[in-house]
Structures are given as C-alpha cells and as structure tokens.
Image 1 (cartoon, helix red, strand yellow):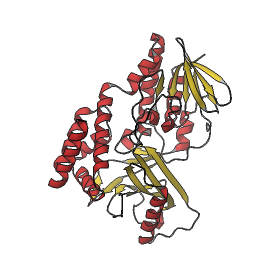
Image 2 (tube, helix red, strand yellow; image 1 turned 45 degrees about the horizontal axis):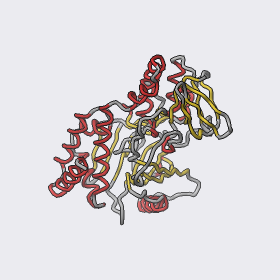
Image 3 (tube, helix red, strand yellow; image 1 turned 60 degrees about the vertical axis):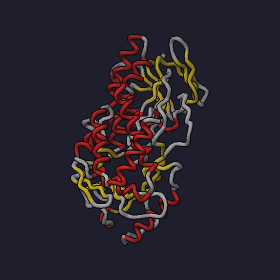
Image 4 (tube, helix red, strand yellow; image 1 turned 180 degrees about the vertical axis):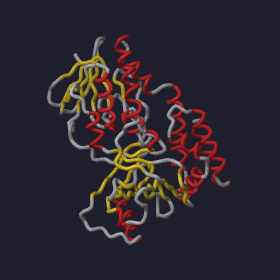
Length: 382
C-alpha cells in the first residue's frame, strides 16, 4: 500500500510528490500526461518562488499602467519548465500514466480507480488535477468568474512594448468597446516575448476569439506584423472556485484552490507550500490523521480569512463599470509598494490585506471610492 497517492503531475503535484518521496513516504503520481512537457507559461513574482527555482527570465524592471505608467519595485520571473521538471524528477516516485476517476474510502485507507481499470490504494490521497478537481466532491452554485487570455510569441527585437530586461505586468490604457482587457508583455528568454491580451476576470469569460481580435488589432496599430508561424497561447481558468468542503481527499495547487483571486497565480504558492504540506502529511500519517493534517497545512485559519477578503476584492472589481476598471488599478498602483506586495502575496497576512484594501479605497477618486466602498461593504455583509 502507498503512503501518498497524488492525482495530477503538473508543477504542484510534482513538487509535492518530490517532497513526500524525499521524506521516505511511498509516493505515486497519476496523470494521463505524465512525462509530457508543460506547455503553459508559468510566471510569478520572483520573491514568491522558493530559492533555487530555475528561471528562464527575471526582470530587472517591472512596469504597470492604468491611467498612467508606474514602475513596480519588484522583480518578475518566468519559470524554466524543463529545468523545473528535471529538478523535481525522483526515481522513488511511481508514475501511472492514467486518469484518476474516483476515490473510495474506508477506515484504513483510500482506493482510487483509474481509467485503465487499475485500483491503487493509499493511506492519503491528494487531488492536484487543477480546476478539474477530479477526485473532490465540489459543487459550483454559480458559473465561475474566469480569467481568459490569448497570447502570441514574437521576436523580442520586433516589438516596442518592453525592452530586454523588463516586464509589463499589465497595461489598461487601450480602451475597448465592452468589457476591459489589458496587455501583458513578458520576455520568455533572450530572444522572444509573449504578448498577451488578458481579461482579468469576467462572468462569463471573455471569448478567445474576442481577445485574439483585440490583440491582433493592438499589434497592427503598433506596427507589429505577424508572419503566420507564431506560437499562440490560450488561457482560461476560474478565479473564484469555492473552497471544497473538508473530506478525505486533500486538494492542492489550483484544485485547492490556491489561485489568487486578484491575479490568477497559484504555481509559486504551490511550490512554496509543497514541503510544508509533505511534512504535515508525514506527521499526520504517524498520528493516523493525514487528511486532517493536510487540510490544516493547506488552509490554516489566517489563509482562509485572507482568501475570503481577496474574493470580496474580486467581486468588487466585477461589479465596476468597464470604464472604472483602469481608474481602480490607477488607485491600486498609487498605493505604497509594500501594501501592493502584501495584497499580491502573503496568503496568511490578514492585517496586511486589510491595510492594502483600505489604502486602495483611500487612493481612489471620490466617486470611485464611494462605489468601491459600497460594493465591498455590501459583499462582506452578504
């Protein structure tokens, strides 16, 4: 019998599997795509990544723009996917290239049924299948607010949005008819840059067709010609998935969901949390309460409170008229850097989250301030 069985071999599941295996726990991964390259671009604030995370790019300058341009006192980074996969490779992890269908539990362990007919038995099961939440008992009462984006990779020298060692976190200055979207520009290495038209959150999600049309128009207006052989990237995922009820399966990564309701980031948090969760599982197995210990490690009380506040912030943003969204971000980027950072990071920093939200309201123009405050009060009291 296994000690730990993890469904999902993306960065979150792989990091956790490596951490549990290094503690001597009998560990297995289940994923139909196990061993295949990770195609997504995983980016993060550099200071949120664990020390030693391999990087393909790290900015020396990071900019953002709402109504005006701001320089952010924080470095931005792109993870080197292949180097990270190699770093997380461990011969002590059993890998099953199959899909996890469902889990059954008894007093001693859990049994997971795979789509190839096999059954694997483990003392604790982790769901790291992302937004699929394949093994979790989760109910969405309303359609989720989703982030969607379409990006294209072009030669760094053929665009004018960023220079070689800088990143453009978001630029809201181009106005569109309908829901707002922003440009995200990120060098992937020394020669290529990802230019991405992004809808931060909408319910329902903005279509990829609309985002691609906006991006092509933006590129054309800036004199960037596409040759037709470019690599495109499409993104769509929920930003406000509800927390699953506590159960025998422990969620991790985007399945937890560790997705930040203001940015959509989860990979850096998952990589940082993996060793702590592994230790909690090991201790819990010794005490006969691994699932309970895992849940406490993923969602301590402070993290639950911060996540709830950030979800309020997301709903406030969704409640604003499109024309007010750039003004909202102008207020955000006008607050002190340390408060911006505490809102964008620090998943257990409840005082910092409160101060950051209050600072944004205080920095907003009078009309917007009243609207944001009313929305926030209404949602926290609902």
